[in-house]
Image 1 (cartoon, rainbow, N blue to C red):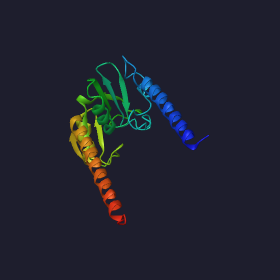
Image 2 (tube, rainbow, N blue to C red):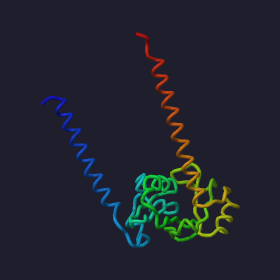
Image 3 (cartoon, one colour):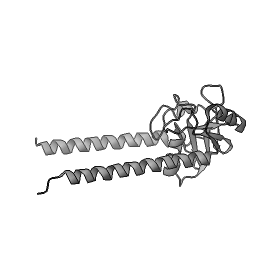
Image 4 (cartoon, one colour):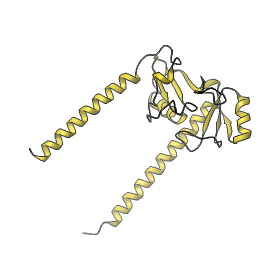
Length: 191
């Protein structure tokens, strides 16, 4: 058997396996859920964007409930921003965030429209160097600000900060790629 045929067969096999894995992932994450908050960590244990364990990061997880009834779980505000960008045509029924001030584990979820975010504090961020932590009450967020620093904001402020971080990261990557290509081109000996 020729190496080219063997390589082509392996590529086709890998593509077929990847396609069936994608189909099974879509089936798992694309179900209508009339009660998304009931046992949400069991139904959506992994982040749809980065595959992180949402149970481990229960204090930062978010849940998106789309207008068509489908639900997706994420590990952080950063991944929510990416979901919102990818699925923007679907519309939203609700987006839920954890109440960081709650003593229960896992943290209970609240609607982001009523949440107050503490942005840029000394609290640990998930998927970001700049933390974005949600609280059910503004008073709890202000109390945490006294201890950990940061700025008070809304969900819109947190998503904006996350999107700005993503944009800056993409621009850094682009600049690095251009610099690498320039160095490679300059290092080639003249023919």
